[in-house]
Length: 136
Image 1 (cartoon, one colour):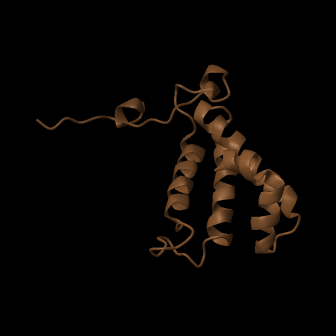
Image 2 (cartoon, rainbow, N blue to C red; image 1 turned 135 degrees about the vertical axis):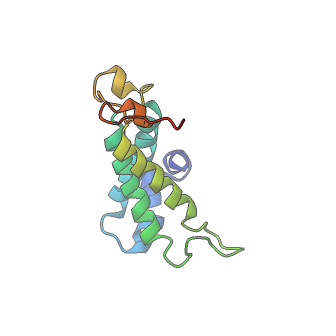
């Protein structure tokens, strides 16, 4: 959707048509901010570069969209609704929160460039203080 906002609609028109209707101040500036956050943040998240910052910014935009745009639609929109419900937004927010809390994995630019040095342990055996017991 970010590419559509940038190329087809234009961030300023997106701000004037969608954001202004919500009653938010400086809609054109917010249109640019949302468009660039979605586009650049999405690319950075895919590359694993400044992952935690990108995920935080994307989660902020998604939370704003879920609260401001879709409160009347509910979690799942009724059949025939023009807009989808908040189900996709909530799933993307959950993924962004996961990236914020866990950080990037080993195959990320954050690790290659030394921005992130740790990888979250997914198994108990990876942690030095946890002993694994095997049932006989």
